[in-house]
Image 1: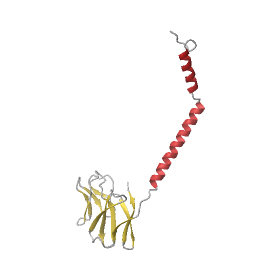
Image 2: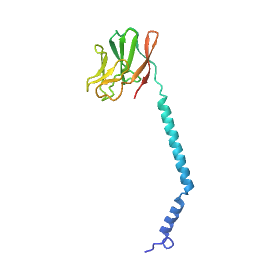
Image 3: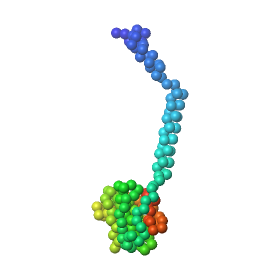
Image 4: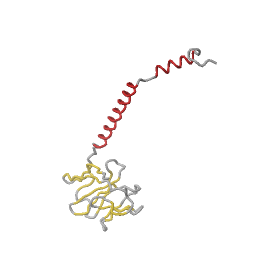
Length: 162
């Protein structure tokens, strides 16, 4: 049996292929450097596009439509994301995501307690800022930024806090 490339034509062809596939140290570092640069540029682009997210402006209610101590369910920023609009005082409106940050159960406004409550595991949120007051939720409710434009209450952004 022939074992050397000189004696075996198939081994000679394989040795030639291996020699052709060898990459110099300089070429290797160049490839690694370009790959790292491309990866960094891609990560920077993803971060920038995620941070500069724009939201649609959407009329969610009209001033005076909800009584003091009342609430209204609406969707924002898409038609499948439920939110809760509250009117805790005469001139105050606040809005939050209606999805509990613990297990994604729907939350409910309890005006008599001035709290937002998740019935699934006893999560309790503040009406003032959506912060967790009790229970297992790990984060506050995402807040919907509102603007009053004439008689319209307009949702303009979603603010997620850590």
